[in-house]
Amino acid sequence: MLVSAKDMLQKAREGKYAVGQFNINNLEWTKAILLTAQENNSPVILGVSEGAAKYMCGFKTIVNMVEGMMEELNITVPVAVHLDHGSYDGAKKAMEAGFSSIMFDGSHYPIEENIAKTKEMVELAHAKGLSLEAEVGSIGGEEDGVVGAGEVADPAECKLIADLGIDMLAAGIGNIHGKYPENWAGLNFDALAAINNATGNMPLVLHGGTGIPAEMIQKAISLGVSKINVNTECQLAFADATRKYIEAGKDLEGKGFDPRKLLAPGFESIKTTVKEKMELFGSINKA
Ligand code: G3H
Ligand code: ZN
Image (cartoon, rainbow, N blue to C red):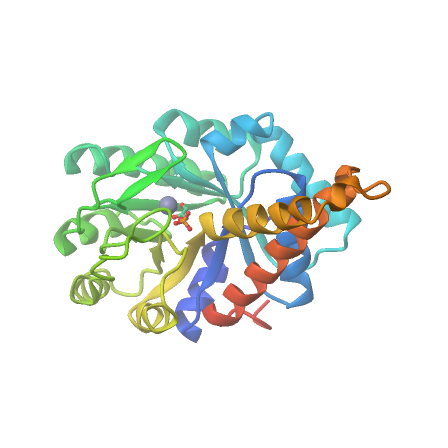
């Protein structure tokens, strides 16, 4: 059964570790992440952007795929299916389709509008027992058509949004979607500390988890980060492993062209990446 992310993140906040949100794109991604979570006894959040949902034939298909897989693979660790960077309409649709957790990303609206819309989303989500994530400031770069200016969040605005009763807060602290540029200034820990102080025990969410150095991840967790989103890193690992398979000519040997063989190295590379992140985030044996 899918669960909301609320309990797993409150436990993570108290236990000073973070739960990984790993974005899914298809069956291989989903299976690799679920199996890795089960093998490592870790809670896990499957992130789904609206673009990825469209690609996977809609929210209902995803809920049915994940629930079916959990039953067939005997997945017993806590699993949330979470809408990533949801729009106002998309969030409502994902709630109706059976997602167990929702991010409503109102960060591109003026703060008053972000507050009003987030308030409505909290009420809708909680009436169904779902967890709700909101965003203040913005994440730099682009993810699936969602473009952010990388604006560092204002702690006072974070408090206004946190006080609406959300379950987790994503705040811009210099983090960026996709690969970090060579001249990246790093995470803004002064801003994170101020946001953490302003929002009490709110589990904070670190987007743009790809390629952030281990020491920064650990410091972020010590300052209240309880959920870390990773997407690009699994995609890069998958592409790299698949390229190596093809460059070695393995698709031309025997039945190497069979997708069950062709996609296997990429599948294994996602498992390895997810396990490394779970170790770094400290979520292993926390199910
Ligand atoms: O919302 C998802 C993420 O923030 C993932 O970011 O692709 O940089 O790992 P990433
Ligand atoms: Zn994100």
